[in-house]
Each structure stands twice: as structure tokens, then as C-alpha cells.
Length: 222
Image 1 (cartoon, helix red, strand yellow):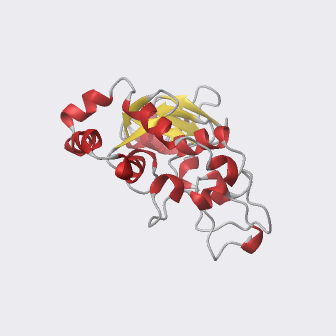
Image 2 (image 1 turned 30 degrees about the vertical axis):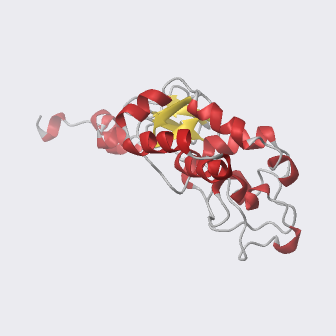
């Protein structure tokens, strides 16, 4: 194409000039909240991401964030955040710390190990096979600590095995194939992205948003 044949229309079709409307709400996690009291609702940034508050947060002694007490699931010597999908499930199950601690951990463990693909994952991944074999052999006195190991493996947002348990789908999913959007509150396919204009997820990293026509950052790379 000669310089005379170049038009404004060609420039508008260039991938670099397309409006990027992608927003990854899961990356907005902050190190501290600015709450002055409470922290028991989604307006608290720590609560929203399934994290406990810390000494640098503004809530101090008035904090009621139930995620301060995730040692109930992850063990006494750990300070972990809940995976976004686990966070959603916990908020539905418990309204406060007291409610959190009434959740039956044994039933939660059974929910995970009885899901459709747990046996399949055990057959191909050594960590889960090892955990399962030990679970069958240990006595009742050590069951809780072993359950907490599984919870850290599949329900924590800080320790990863490359998989997480999806409450949305009752399935062990690969983190590179699925993700849980904290705004849409659903587990999404890796090819779905959250549009910041429409404020919802849309399918196709190389396709325009169904609502506004915006693009994901990955469409430019592609």
C-alpha cells in the first residue's frame, strides 16, 4: 500500500488503537483496608478478598472480619487468605466468626474428596495421591491436621498446587484453565475476561466484548 492509499479507517482498525476495556478485579487486592470499624461486609477490601486484617489496617480493635480466623481451616501456624471461590462459599455459609466456626470441617473435606474428578487427579498427581493414602491410614487424633493440609492445598489463595476446588462446579480445576471472578462471583473459563465498562465477564480473549465492543489486553498481543 502506498502512502497515498493509507486512510484513517486503516488506523482505526489497527489493534493498538482499539480501546482496551479489560479489568482484572482479582488483582485489586490491597495490603490493608481503610475501614474505621466493622470490616464485616464487602466494602472492606480485606473481607472482599477473603483476607484477615492486619495491624496496618484502620479498623484496629473494632475489627469484625471473620477472615481473621481462617486458622480454623488452614491451621494455627498459618496466615493465609481464602481462594476467591472459597471466599464466596464462606460468605454464604457464615455471617460472622461464630458462624464460621460452626462449619463442619469433616463434611467440607468429604465434599472435596468425593467430587467427580478427585480420584482422577490422585491418579496423575503425586501430592494428592500421597495425601489420600495417608488419610486412609492415620488415626482420628490426626485427622484434623491432615484435613487442614488439604484445605491449604485447594482452598487457599496463597499456597498453590496448580489446582483449586471449585464450589461453583464441584470439581478440582486447573488454575491455568479456570479462574473465579470476584465481581461476577463465578468460576470462569480462562478465555473469559472481565470488561471494566460493562462490569461483567465476556468470552473470547481475541474477541470484542459482546456489550461494548472493547478488547482485552491479550487480543492486542494475539
